[in-house]
Each structure stands twice: as structure tokens, then as C-alpha cells.
Length: 81
Image (cartoon, rainbow, N blue to C red; front, side, top):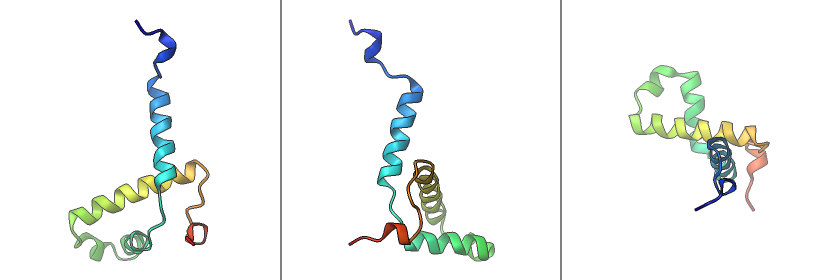
């Protein structure tokens, strides 16, 4: 039988998942343009497909988690190369 120390608590699993989300997040100029459209012209944004809305929602959530873990989420902080 496994000893209790072999089990991680729910909070540990959540933290590990969030750390992975933070590490995997990448700046996406297209998602940033959609976020700006959502904020600037909500009527135009509402005409976009539900898939776009969901994608931006996931992107925003992952970006917030990355920021919570100290990642620079700005465009200049995410230049590749």
C-alpha cells in the first residue's frame, strides 16, 4: 500500500497545472488583435464565431496565469530569435 506522502493534494495538482500553463503560454499577435477588437468594438467582436470567442477566452486565461507566475506577457517580452 502507498504511504500518504505519495499522494499530492488537490492544491498541489492545481498549482502544477497552472505552472505548466504559464510555461506554455506564448504571445500571439492575432489573439491580441482580437482582444483589442473585443474592447474597442464589441458589436464587431460579437459577430465573430463562437470558436473565436472560446479561443480568445482560453488565451486570456492562460495569459493571466502566466502573468501571475511572473512571466512578461508584453509583445517586447516575448520576441523569439
